[in-house]
Length: 124
Image (cartoon, rainbow, N blue to C red):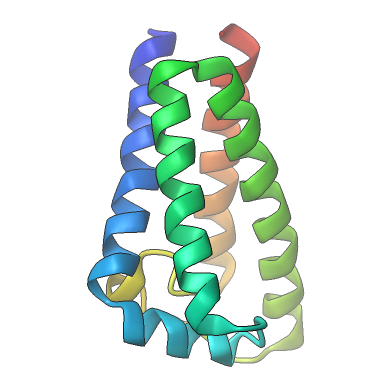
């Protein structure tokens, strides 16, 4: 069961990386609107990080889930600040597929992914 959950989380991270790669210019523009430094470079950093997390989740689920949890937790804190600011900006978490402004819905999705990463980490 734990391996299945790790693979499910890996698929989410791989999907996010692939979506960013497929819509690099849009993702960079979204990152710029978030105020992230060097948005073009940040797209590549995020793609690489998400691919690495996906691979680790399949190869070494315990370590992959810890890294996934840390990245998700950090980004969720950032998103909470964004929601509180009231700025209608998209996170581009899934490239061009995620154009809606960050909202409570985004935070719930991240919370579910955090819970999934925690379950995998605690049962690995």
